[in-house]
Length: 229
Length: 229
Image (tube, rainbow over all chains, first blue to last red; front, top):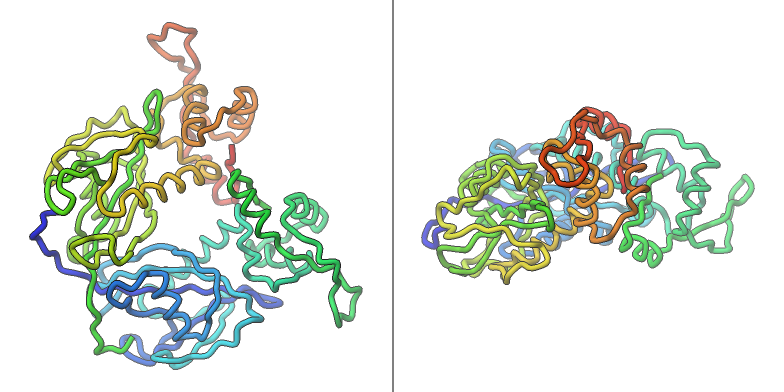
């Protein structure tokens, strides 16, 4: 690192893979590009980092500008710098993945995104840049991570039933889980708080509602507790 | 992302946190900076990414140039972009962590590193830039990761005893493990191959030598097997 040497510098962007969960599907938010390159193509929300802007702040700003989402669980995913990933020249992107409670968010396209829309992860269209690769890495991270951290809770409403929680794991992991084993395991973790409330306005027998115990989770995480389901 | 807009660009560097394990300690390799800024201070090996150079390639190149290490298990750790992390101006660094078999590597300082040396992780000197922060993130990642992936094997010789393996976990996790439970658990994972060899030239009773079954690990990983010890 000689002091006087000055290498050529890359453009720096952030991109966000935002997951949401509805009744039936795990979904990802995509924006339709309003400007070249790849105008009219679907892409991950993202854009250029401003000079000296903190990276996570840039990701949250772009997310807000392009989708209207203001609150999200956000973690850095991976930094992609392949030579030909952007036709405008050498561009490095710091990718983030985000989890949002779908019910909280009406999405709205703004700035240079002409449209923003949720797609089921199993049915995404062709994407601009190397965004399909980034999306795949994010999906793999999510699937790996729900096995040892209860991040899935970020996708659920504040209060949820055990059936909803099981459905979440089944959807993300793409496998059926045995109801009795699942309940035994998840309750034994001590991560759920009974709200002493039941579902309202349901046709079937109203199920008990739970909350996620974030404090208890932090305690367990310090000790290296394993959350595998 | 308007097509014509051109933001200011950051300098881009890579930095490597390289861990090794000897008889007694978990160690990290540091280089003494031969040039400003922070001349004479200890730092992580690293340097500027060349135009369009793949990021991992840049990390391996810098590692080789500054320490002589050519073979290492290397994974991207995190990208750091805080405003004031480099006195030369806006500089974003993609950090990697690496695991090496200490016995394989005589280290040698070259290029602009004036010295390279292994330090016990519990006794590192003050570091240049935000390198102490990067080091802490890497150490946390290593401690978290050995609980659910057998990456610790990257730190051991090709053939090792169960005692060496237990010592590895105890050193990284900073806790004593019960010998019987540890052996039962580690053998039940089916990840160890008996070499039918025993230690040579030891004063005590020669212990059996094992190898890590990489093929079996890949099989289990696909299924989401948990390696927690």
